[in-house]
Image (cartoon, rainbow, N blue to C red):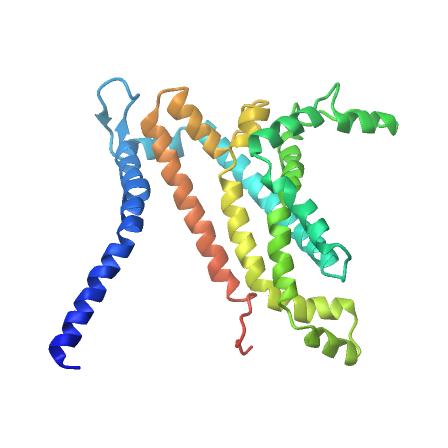
Length: 301
């Protein structure tokens, strides 16, 4: 094949490559890059979406950091929820996956049972748990009273509202269970048998075989769970409206309130960008630290 034909073929491949990625590139530009750019520009304005916008530069960011007690409160609530809920979800999901991986009969049935709650919309789940947590008529308090215990002010107490949301978050760990189960089933059983032959017990197998080989899956679930927790919105919006006394006011709920209740679109977008930066920083910290505890096939340590 001569040079001219090769050049023509390469140009055709390039053109077809651009044609094939054009829908994705257009969608990325229209639904991601343009909204993010518009959001950043709006964060530099003082704008109520009705009157003429006023350019304030970094004023919205400075005001949130130095003057807004409400913003500091929602950051504390969001970080509190994230730090507590994500490890609990990972531990419970890993424990459930290991139980399902232990030669359980009807594995498909149990896997479906664990996964089904994840398919229920968060709005429906929130309404259901709103009834479960009801102080007077809720099922949980009815069970506590039946056992001779006092009623608990689940979502009506400033001290209990975030723990209540954390408990609720364990309801939908089915997707984590399925991912962990897939990772466990990919671990060669010969390695587990080798530990047993060398005199090791179940703990040694878990500590020196299962955890290292499952660490990439743990990293993935940790990152996804952390990003999801930082975007907490539906549950407090429906169940508590951020109360009582802003004890369950998450960052995203505060963004929603500023944008659509208080008419402060500039401040809302500034908060959104600060949440984006916070998520990026925490993700980078996890990724950088993961080099010490994540093991991939072929690693020599």
